Length: 138
Image 1 (cartoon, rainbow, N blue to C red):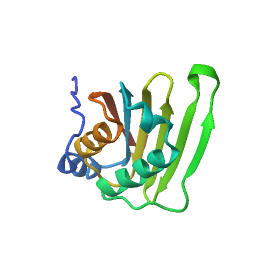
Image 2 (image 1 turned 135 degrees about the vertical axis):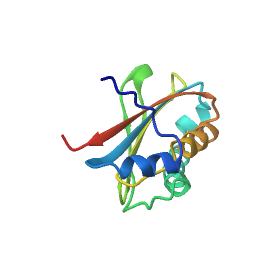
Image 3 (image 1 turned 30 degrees about the vertical axis):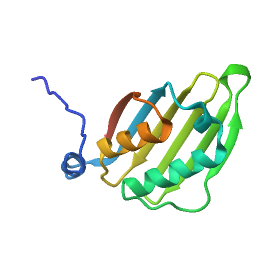
């Protein structure tokens, strides 16, 4: 028997998945292109994004964020790690390629659609692909 999995999009979709036995968390990975280069270079803007994303999806931040610049040449950029009380938001901004990669992991249900819409607006792009990985106890 083949099973077809439709990725959760709405808060209700996610609540349904979290109600299933053994589900621990959901990881949303967003890959962006054509981003506003000003946002990718602005450390304050990146920190603000992580805090506002948490607020947008009804999560609470925990402690101070971590912000570091990593890489070399065209592959360097800012990385933000923002702990939330249910896991973390990680942002990698690749300023020279106009790209970003954002991971949102939480053991509390959230709206994928809301996170995507907020992220597109914050980074000034419509070019976004995403995946959702549901972690179930093996």
